[in-house]
Image (cartoon, rainbow, N blue to C red; front, side, top):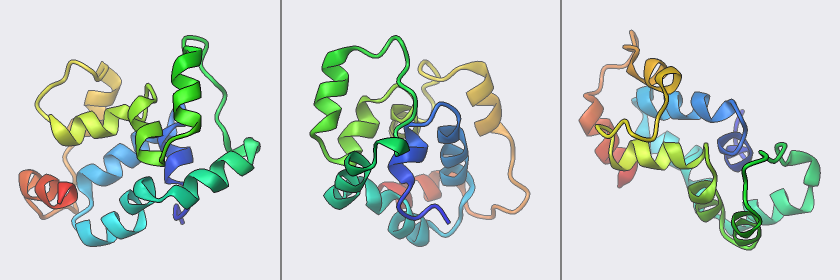
Length: 130
């Protein structure tokens, strides 16, 4: 279960790819919004994350102090938007055709067809954004 861990996963060095792929192929967008994406707008998740420093991923060397300071006092969505890897989910949702912010490995992961997904990708994206 990933409930309660969306912020931690989206700011992790590698786990953000799994969340991006999950959002990309999950047909049940209502459950996805309730179980994962709603956490990003919930301030109590931020408080839980801040109270337990062991949940924090190792800071990347190129993170600047201003970004870390700003994210420490914001709701999870802002923290994800300011994070180098976490922001890629938001960019993918808002501008899926723009590949400027994704590397070849990320594009390869996202472009793979899903055998179990039946919903049109553009419809799924609209429902997730709603």
